[in-house]
Length: 317
View 1: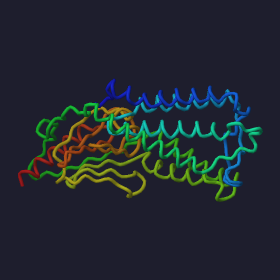
View 2 (view 1 turned 180 degrees about the vertical axis):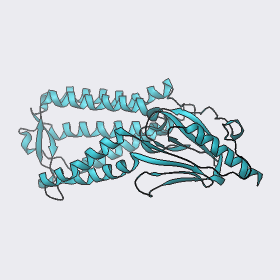
View 3 (view 1 turned 90 degrees about the horizontal axis):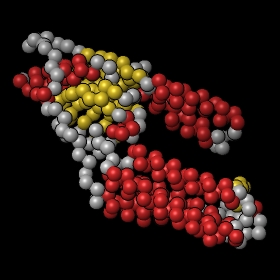
View 4 (view 1 turned 90 degrees about the vertical axis):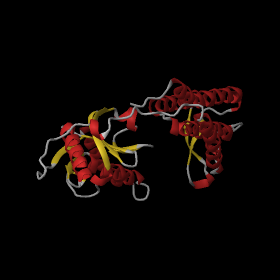
């Protein structure tokens, strides 16, 4: 299993430490020039005029907590190839926090504070600069190497006669994804009732999260002469198929969704993809391109054995 090295974790936390230090220093230097409360939320009407307010101490605390929380999150999930994302996140978040302070500077009344849309461009530019720094620092971290998995000849086998045909199929589900998808879909009518369209944008978010989440909450995994197929249990599409002629071998491995794939659902990483519904036993298929495809499913040993047997039989044709 790939795990972040201590050096990588330090480099992922570093931008948040630097940004937090700069943010608190600026806040301390400008403290006496800031109104209390601060204007912290700005509407689209009136040129970005303030419509939400937060006390000075609360704003400092919330900003610090936001940066520290992001630092912890990136330390949990960071990979060498994504280090730039940690630096970009720190830059964008820190720039917005400081720009809001600047907008409030010397304001007699926070209600009159205006935050221009140009602030977003400045924050994006800061994020881009720090992302480049993250890319450069990633080169100082050794590449994450996976321990090579067993070759096709080392995997399990299912004894089949020359004329015998076999297939294997199992359903795999995730209660967590099911609950989250149902909650997201249940929020759609609530959002539409509480606010008219287009103000009810959470309804769209509920659909975007709920529909694919529900589709992946329970899948059907099939191994047969065509290869490996993973599709939603209730509908035939969308599906993921690994053709038999692209399979070089299969094995079984316990997977950690967060450490290896960064979460649950359909996951894409640099050298592997997968349908990850839980931690534990997974069927891992090695493709001729060198990439791996994993799916968490019970009785994965039988599926791997059948795939390896079919691959060997294909090689003798």
